[in-house]
Every structure is written in C-alpha cells, then in structure tokens.
Image (cartoon, rainbow, N blue to C red):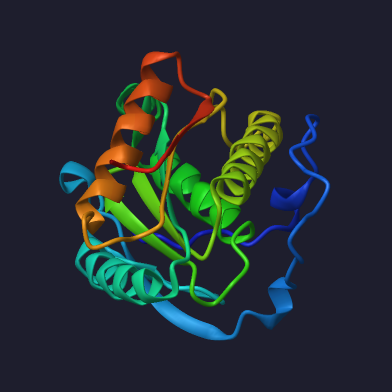
Length: 222
C-alpha cells in the first residue's frame, strides 16, 4: 500500500489551547518545500512500501538518524550548545490498527508526519522513523524550553487534526493522540548520544504511563 502523506492546509489550524510562549520561531511556507526524499514505514511488516513526497526536511530511517545524531553530538560538544530529542508515539496504535485496518493507519500516520513537518523549522532539524509508529525529531542548538514548545505544538495540532478527520464522512475513526518524550543535553566527554536517547525513551514511557496525550521533559541525561 502506498504511503503518500496528504498535503492539506487544514492540518495547520490553530489549536484551541495556546502552546506559544512569548517568543515564537518563524514559520515557513509550504510552497518553499522543494526537495524530494524517501520515507519508509515498516511497523511489524505492516507497511512495505516506499512513498515519495516533497518537503523541506528529510524523513529518514533509523540508521541515517544515528549517523546524524553522532555528527551533531560531536559538533555541539565543541560549541557547548544543547542538543534536544523528541520521541513521538501514537497512543493505542495497535488497537487503532485492529479496529480500523491498514488503510486508516496509513492515512493517519501520514497526517502525523505532516503535522510534525510543519512544526520543525530549520534545515538541521531531523525527522526520522525511530521504530514502528514512533518518530524521532533531533533538534540541534535547542534548549529544553524550546523543545517543549515544539513538542506541545505538535501534540495540540495533532488533536485539532483528529477533530477534523472524525467529521469526515469518508473516514470514521476515533481521535488519535501523541505521547512525547523530550530530552536535552549539552554534550560533554563524560556523556554519549546513548544518554540522550535513553532520557527521551524514559520520558516517553512516563508520558504513556500517565495516560498519553502529553509531553514529559528530562534535562541533563547524567
């Protein structure tokens, strides 16, 4: 089954809650997205197709993400700048798949990717399929507060997207929500990229254990 994330301006509706702090990053126009990349979905053999779409950032696979993480870690260790990681996972995804089938899963994961893409701003920000229905967002030179703002915006705009999809007569589906684990570390010789990943995974588990549809933060990674 093909995976082509839909491009609808409806995704960008403002959430009912306000995630914006006093200082917001600049938004970018979707009409400026000119580069074509590959995206692969293979959660437990469900999706075996490579879909192509245009965007300004690469949705990469895990091995490419690991390479990028190592490079950014070395660079920011020299510059003594923070590196943040978001892990975003769809809540109750397996139940959703059982109830609504592969086509609905394909559609909704495409919408999730679309929302994440519209909320990361810079060329060095990296979006990857971490595993299954979990996506990783690597944010160089991003503080814990800035990472939390981005994560909150992604979560709230996913909720807005769900309301619109539930009202669609062509697709009957429940609301889909995200749990997000956030970690931020200033790289040092005493730490490693594995510390950043472990902290984000722990934060993600805490968000899920608390009921999902929320962000949990962790800073330091020591």
